[in-house]
Image (cartoon, rainbow, N blue to C red; front, side, top):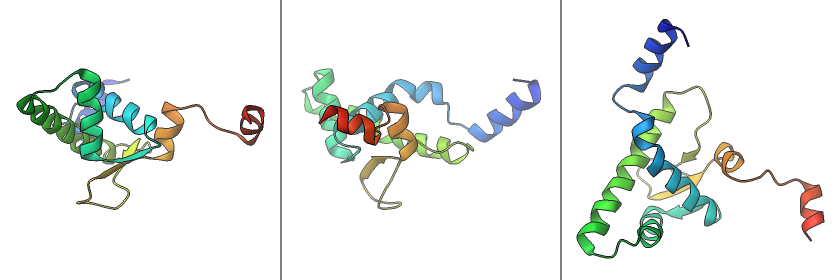
Length: 121
């Protein structure tokens, strides 16, 4: 990457740094994939809290806030990139349902083909 490309990349990123979000975003992606690709955001938070062993109400609320912020920041980051986003709000802005996009499904899970379906069945 050249210095000019790096400067343009940083301008597109604004205040969002994907490296700060990556572990949390990866957990969200993994949870969505495990649940069929779409889930209400509170269910995503509940499942991640269970996986992390977070039980106390204040800690669960803090985790929920972290996840919600990471998802929102990811959407801002993804909107500024030419590549297809991995997640989206399938019911539009203001909805609380999170879902994988086709690009997200392809990144997270193996591509399913008619041949692989018939071999599995």
